[in-house]
Amino acid sequence: MLATVAVLLFPLGLVYAAIRDVASYEIPNWLSVALVADFVILALALSFDWRVIGLHLGAGLVVLVV
Image 1 (cartoon, helix red, strand yellow):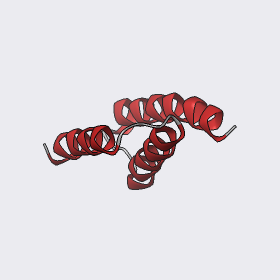
Image 2 (cartoon, one colour; image 1 turned 90 degrees about the horizontal axis):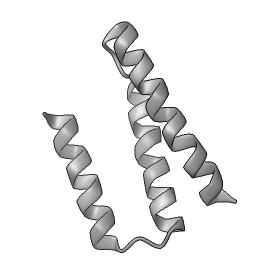
Image 3 (spheres, one colour; image 1 turned 120 degrees about the horizontal axis):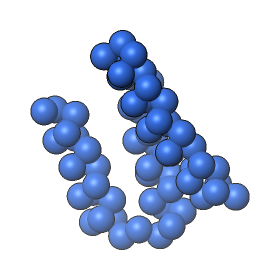
Image 4 (spheres, helix red, strand yellow; image 1 turned 90 degrees about the vertical axis):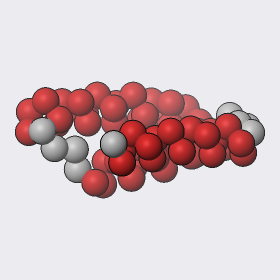
């Protein structure tokens, strides 16, 4: 059940972030944190390896820094 909710919320969050970015050139911090939290929940629910989770979070961090 939790994985299903996460699978539905993640794309919706990305679409909302894209719309906000196009409209105001700003993505709220709470949305970025929510997307990261949703990814972690989804990755754990789908039994991702810890190394894979770390690589994904590292790639996301690099994108946010750039």
